Every structure is written in structure tokens, then in C-alpha cells.
Image (cartoon, rainbow, N blue to C red; front, side, top):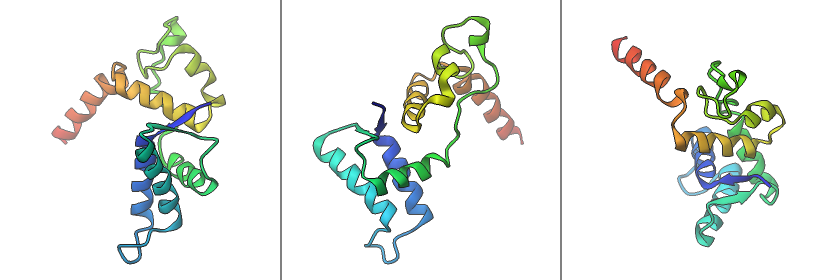
Length: 139
């Protein structure tokens, strides 16, 4: 079963902290509190991932709201898997990941995003990122 990494829980907490700040600096709105409870248990038990099925409903809904605010696909429209590569040079996904992307659950997609981001070998993370940075510096 796909799992949600603790860094995604952290990102979702920060998303909700910005979206619905604490009214008094002490109390947390329900979505932030639900995610913080999951996060706290993960830290306490030293878990880096939580099963998406076992998440409490409020926390999962809050996580899914954050998830829908993130890019869905890492595709940069340069797919070398269509040329026979086992792993796409453009985005870093495997042939199977590219083919089955629409079938993946949010946790499966985030797991793939995490792997390709950590690997950072795809063009998405080097050639095109470098060009964007150069354009920004010039502009």
C-alpha cells in the first residue's frame, strides 16, 4: 500500500498554517491540528511514512487538499520512454510510471515525485532548471 512521507505531512502543515493561521497563536484550526497529530505520532514512533489508508479522515482530507495544490505530473514534454528508454530522461519516471500515471493514487504519485527529486538526474532537475535560473537572473 502506498505511503505518505513525513516531508509531505510537513508541507501540508505549512500549507494549512498559511491558508488558515492560528486565531490566537496557540490554537490550531482543524486541518492543521489533524495533520500535526499524525506528524507528532510519526516523530514519536520514528516513522518516516504513514499508510494513506490508516490516516484519520480529517488529516487525509487536509493532506489531499494540499496535494491538489501541487503539480500533478513531473512531465516536461520530453519523454524518452517513447523512444525505448526504461527511464525517462526528461522527468525521471520509469516507463511503467509514465504509462500508468493516471491510475496512481495521490500517495503513489508523491512517492514517485520524492524518488525522482532525490535522484535529481532527470533533465527536469538540471538542464531546464539551469536555463530557468539563467533567464531569471538576466530578466
